[in-house]
Amino acid sequence: MPVRNKTMIKPDMPVLDTAKKYLVIDNIYDTGDTYHKVIDALTEFNCDFAFCMSRYKRHWITAKVLDHNRWIVFPWE
Image (cartoon, rainbow, N blue to C red; front, side, top):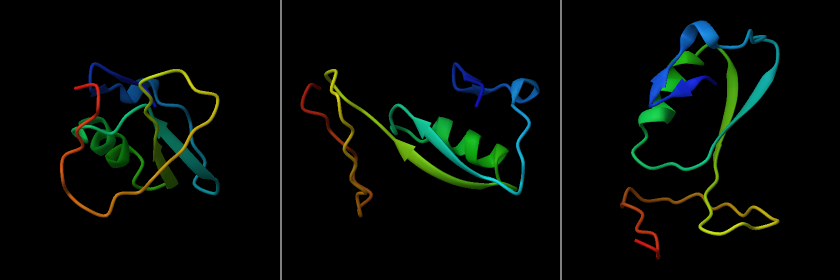
């Protein structure tokens, strides 16, 4: 999805097919600003969302869904 400086560039969006399912991956979920702009642009499509973050380069990705609304404090902050 074309998001630059937290702004959705709708004219640059790829042509999507409503018959397909899409996976949207963002590098980090922080304030939710980018997420909300992307989900608003994709409301008519079947999408799953994933957020990846790593302080160091790794050869694997792990994920965890948090069941709370608390702010995430990273160890390097």
